[in-house]
Structures are given as C-alpha cells and as structure tokens.
Image (cartoon, rainbow over all chains, first blue to last red; front, side, top):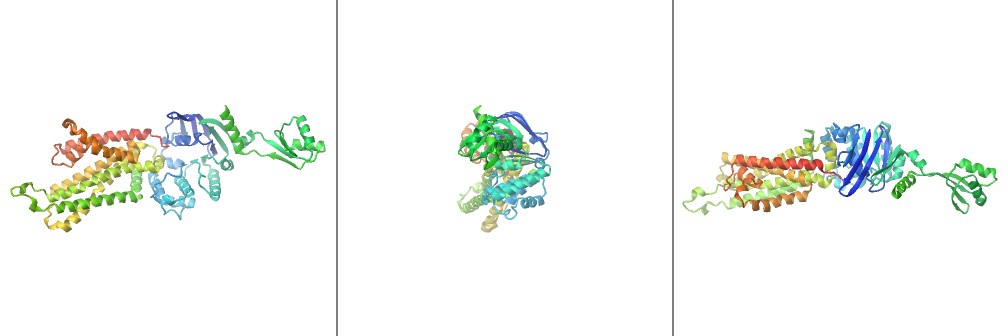
Length: 296
Length: 245
C-alpha cells in the first residue's frame, strides 16, 4: 500500500534519508519511529510528493503521490499544526481544501463534528490552541474519507483526553481497513496503536517488526525478591541463568522464564516474596536498537 | 475549475490583507483625484495655449492607474502568503501537479488585479461628480484609457505572482519588484536601444500609452507577453523543483 524503495535525500551537505526501504501493507497501522532528526518527516514528505528524493522512489497504492488522480480521496495527511492562514476561520480553511479537491461543502461540517471543532469553526485559526490546530489538520486529512492516512506526530499538542480520542479514532479507522502510517516521538502512544513499527535512525533503516516482536527483541528478564537471595543466586547461575543485578533481597535474572526460576526456588525450598516477568516496553526496545545503530 | 474556485476562496476568506490593500489604494486615489481637480483651474492656462490645456477627464482616469502598484502587491501575495503561512503544503497535497497551481494562481491574480481598478474608478467618479460634475465630459477615448488600465493592472498582478513564485518569499518578491521599478529599469533605460524592451516601459508606454513614450500598444503588449511567459516558465520550473519542508 505504501512502498519506499532505496530512498535517499540529501539537503546540500546533510544526508537526511539514506537508502531507506520499507513497505506498509494494506490495513496496517504502522508506527514510524526514530529519534529527532532521524529523517521521519522528510520521508513522509517525500511519500506525499512535497520533497523530491535525491534517489529512489516512494509510492502509495502503487503510484507516486503526484500520479494519484484525486489525492485527497486516496491519502489524508497531517504534517504540522502551523500550516494555516491565521486570519482564516477553521471552517473556511476546510472549505478551501474541500473546494480544491471537489469535495461537497456539507462534508466540511461532518469532519468538523468528527474532530469536535464545530463550536470553534467560526473563529480565526490564529486564536486556536495547538491542540485545536492539530484537530483541524486531522479534519482536513479526513475530508476525502481516504483509504490511507499519513500522520506526522498527530498527538502533538493534544491533551490526555485528546490523545485518548485520537487513539480510539485511529483504531476505529484501522478497523475499517484503512492503512495508517503514523510517526511519533511519544513511543508509548505508538505502542498502544500500531500493529507494526518501522524504526529509522540517521536516515537509515533499523528495523521493521510487529510491536510484539520489537518488545521481545530486547532481553526480557525475571525479577525475583527473596529473603534467601544469597542462596538463590548461585543456584540460578548453576542452572545457566545469568543474574544481571543483585541488590539486597532483589535479583534480576537476565534470561529464563518465571516458571523456571519459580520451580528452581521451590525445588530448593527457597521462599519467594516476588516473582515477576520484567516487561520490556517498546521504548526500551527502541532505545536499545537505536543505541546499537549509533555505536556501529 | 475546482482549483480556480479554491484560489478565489482563499482571497475571499483572508479579507484583512485584501482590505488593507484596498483601503490604501482608495486613499491614494481619493487624494489623487482631489489633487487633480484642485489643480485643474482653467485660469492657469496662458492665452494662446488653450489647445495644450490638459484634459481633466484624462487626468482623472490616470489617477486610477495607481491601482497598478496594489495589483503588483496582491499578485505577489497570492502565492507568497502560502509559503509564509505554510498553507502551500495543503495546496500541493490537494493538487500535486504544481504547474496547474501556478497557472491558476496567475489567472486569479490577473482577475483580482484587474478588479482592483473597479473601486478606484468608482471612487474617482463619485468625487469628480460631486466636485466638478458640470465640467466633465468623458469620451470614448477616456473609456479606452480606463480599459488599458484594467489590462495593465491584470498584467502587473500576473507578473507579481510570477516573481513571488520564483522567489518563494513575500518580502523578497516585493523588494525585487520595487528595486526593478525604482533602480534597475531607470538605469537600463539610459540606453535608448533597449528601452523598448523593458517591461515597465512596455506597460506604461505601450499599454497605458503615456504621451512621451514612442512605443505602440501592440509592441508593448508583445514585449510584456514575453516577460509574462518567461517569468511564468521560471516560476513553474522553480516551483516544481522546490522542496516543501
């Protein structure tokens, strides 16, 4: 559905995107992750035909964006919350976009209602908060009821309620079979929304995995608390389980399952006060991946 | 047609800038009209030179040619305010074929530039009618002159849009246009052999038909058409290549 092939973009001396390739399958919600300056926004703008690649190509639904017959009906995009004429009202901004795309006017009211901006639609955008601008960007993206959504940091400026609304909205859109590519630096947000993630760093491809695979990638561990930690530690090591941290009655076991550690303790009559799998967040996995990339 | 409607809507729905230009234009036309009428005292013409008496009607029509400056500024703004406010991103997302955007913006700039002459003419006529209505006798020649101002205003607005498309910057485009008008063209006009090929000479001499100019309407129109096409091509090429970051 979205395909990036050997994409390279150089801005004078700066290499923003370096031979990047990935595909987003139809109906997937794909997180697009990378530290600031990784080349996410440049990549999204190349996909949307706003920036010319130095080499390679990007296609949406099998065509370059410029080759789409009626782009707003195929692809909706949220790029930044500052692309508005401050003297124009929110409603008029959408009317301008709708007129260019040949979208009927009543649809403007529908999307305003959809993003909960109907009441503020008659006010000038210059007086909008960042969150309201972000909702207006989303409204513009939804105008053509597109099959593909490309969203660059859409949660920026949204309050917690707005973020929850966005999360539910994206899930609902994905359940309708739409394809969503969403970049974010709020990794926890992507973790809750995305089925898969593409990670880039310094413009280069790092990983493309499901969120579950990514979480599993970082070393999972077991957290054990026992008043007999001194006895347990050598037993674990004898069983081939690496104890990565030992502090008082707390042990962190780098590998192995809770079952194996629990059975070992029971077989040796060791009392446990706590036995839990250390949950690896996407953020930790992401940091490990990009840190690895940095040291290479 | 959709793009044309959208571009017109952009101007209609950001009224402050257009209103500001319009008010400034009307102020200048109002002052100019008053000044022309006030200076048209027939007693100032020496005996024997009555045939050289300036025609009040022609001078009044000429006052409205000040709308050319505002047409130029509006033409520049038609595209550069999109770069300034970042709305060019949405414009190119809706219409990724940028040549079409530039072509439609040129058309809209031309129409709106010509339309700026209407309020100037109306204000001039109202003031003149109230003040010296009994002395006025507009002829077909005056109507033709007003028509030339409409045409010149449209052309200047298109040129402004094209300069804006080339620079991509509001202030830069205005500085380039004014620097050309104030410094570059007067300096180049020193060489009589190239004067006929300069754009402002073609507009004021050829199209508006200033008396001291020796360039015909047709030659002026052809000359300025070359500039419109050349700057338009430059605007399209640079806009196509420009990264919207």
